[in-house]
Amino acid sequence: MRPNRPVLIGIVGVLVLLVVGFVAYFADDLPLIGGGTTYAADFTEAAGLVSGNEVVVAGVQVGQVTGVGLAGSHVRVTFRVKDAWIGDASTAAIKIRTLLGEKYVAIDPLGTADQNPSQDIPLRRTVSPYDVTAALGGLATTVGQIDTRQLAQSFEAIATTFAGTPPELHQALTGLSALSETIASRDNQLAQLLANTQRITATLAADDTQFQALLTDGNALLAEVQSRRDTIHSLLTGTEALATQLSGIVTDNEQQLAPMLAALDQVTNVLQQNQDNLNRALSLAGPFYRMVGNTLGNGRWMDAYLCGLVPRSYAPGVVPSQGCLPPRGGH
Image (cartoon, rainbow, N blue to C red; front, side, top):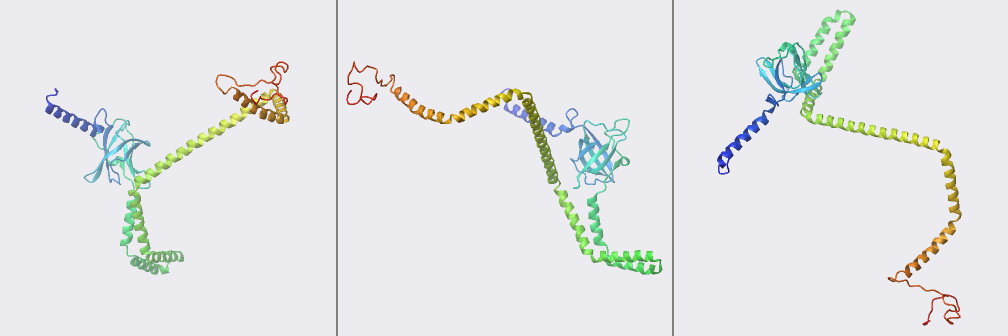
């Protein structure tokens, strides 16, 4: 692995990548880190089961279908199961999960010993479902092949033959004839209805993934609404408890709170009565603080004027006759 041997380093790197890719691709089949044990079961028909469908035991998903193929006159289904016990008398059934036709394999674990993975679960222990989609399709095809006119004539002939029978039987056959005529008159509409039903069923089956996503998102939305409802319920419950606690505090401290509130009311009345004086004081405080600011706003000294500091007898003519006003004219 020295730097002067790049070819050897490249070959080893490619081999390591191949091994890692092989392990990653067949990880489910590895004995230690794989996805469980693989079993096989024989069914009379696949009934729409495909690889990737779920394998369920008691309603819990324990694995998935890994393969569906024809084995002689029956269908062989392989599936992988993890963390679940499969007995030697276990039964397997293909069931319908949704109305759109998605299938899954349900395992009923029975027996006294483990099922041998190399032995298939036989037909006598498996069940295939009745496919409604295929039945509707077959019904549409069958109705299209029926000669309804001939069928109506046959019913009329039967009614005529039994004309001498008791009235009840005659009425029943007459009604049957009328029913056949009604069916014959609506033959095209019935055929079209069944054909459209088959088309709708095929469309829904094709969009099965979107419907599953829609239902999943709906479940998530309902879960979030439920969570928000619980949160709001907790908030309302907490508010109610807080109101109860506050009511208890007020009740317990009513004797202390009543004098305090009365005193607070008296203070409010005094402030209300002296509102004019407070307004006048605030209006006078503004010019006062402005003058103080002017006095101290010229730097590191104060600029002030003191009137009447020196008696008039000591400095005649200094004090103006109008009172203490700032001197003017060089005084």
